[in-house]
Image 1 (cartoon, rainbow, N blue to C red):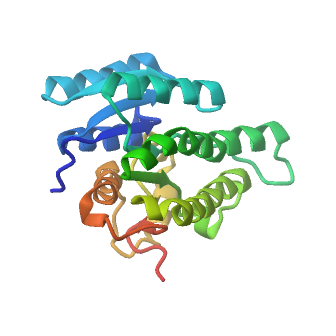
Image 2: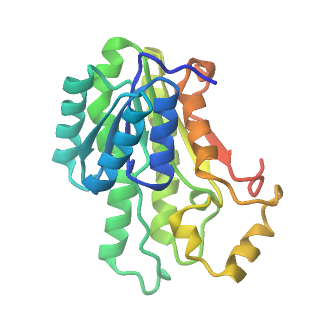
Length: 248
């Protein structure tokens, strides 16, 4: 297990699902965690879960579609926790529809939440990371950003954009010992996937070579690896965690 003691991680969308699992695993491995999301009640519950287990965490209410909030929360996290040297851009939403019927407002909402927020957060942490000459930026993308998905033109475009952002920033900051990578989940068991019909779940499982649904801890473990010194020579990479759906 990678030791992340002495590091401070900021995780967006940390109140539930994959973001919560990432935050818990980072804390378990020794990192102090700045938990960010809109739902304060759920955020506080995650914070309490971490602190009751002996970890260190602070909760910050954050609407990632608000640029000023992103900047002020990151500033507050640095002031309170001393630094932010691991950034996990996990916050994301879906507003599905066929592109012919998709409303511009739904396109903008998904792109702003999933992609633009990551760009703003990266900008906000880079100066301090560059000064300390160490940083880990990890963007949570999706297999649908790699292969597309019917009814998810906005979501797939935002997640594909995260991959391009990852690679571009990785090139820009590599000389400062800052790595920038992405984790691309496949079919992961979350509250959202639990709402699928049994027939659709069975159909999706047929395309997974490993024959099982992924768990949120699978994504959390991948993030912790990329955040650690074990991955110090990996940057600009998309780590696929999808049970073998997409290979190559």
